Length: 308
Image (cartoon, rainbow, N blue to C red; front, side, top):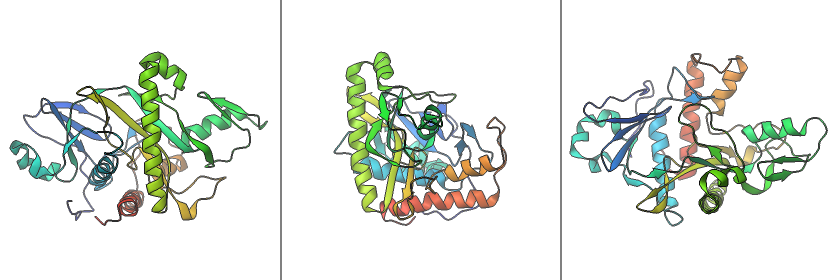
């Protein structure tokens, strides 16, 4: 694993001449290598679907290391698209771009992506809490959302009786939209969605049990799947602070927002300054950038038991 030594500079954009750019997402720069893709996790950070002017130094390296950890941990549950993550195992022509790629890149197999975000929630937080609260109103009445019946007295951050599968549309631009399992089946077929639901819940159960043993609550997360050589496989990133919500078990107290290891810290800052959530995004103060970096590093340390 690459050492992190420079805490002052964030990599916001990669430039690899001669390599076709497959897509530049909110966080990742993806290059086309023919039968494979090169995923490069930059230090860009998006909040409310808008990329911030400042990056979080080393964020891409932390996300990449966590994804590699989880891909290996979950290999007995489902195959994944990972081919190599050490730059010495990349094609020789990429070695000269070590300064941009080392520690933050994955060489992966191309997959036929299923355009469905597979979201699993173990606690009521984030968008589910907001939608639940709006539907319940002030009457405390039971709520039916996304094929699930919720009692009318749930508290913010409360643990759900069982983890639930709440898929969302996969949007390359714009905001993903939560949909019900019933709606998902109409678009992707009952058999496919049934497989995705079963796999998503199985991954969540294994990962959350592991995290709990490390003193971490896996609150919710999202997975992406695709077919590789006809096999359903786990793709993109997995169980990082960018795609998941983690809380410290020792500080957990339902009935209020929780202090997590994700970019919620940035969201909270942006809410505090009353930003309208439209581009351009405001600049992030240095203390917010450094505190966010600390949270990502702490998530890595607690989950893997290793220091960067």
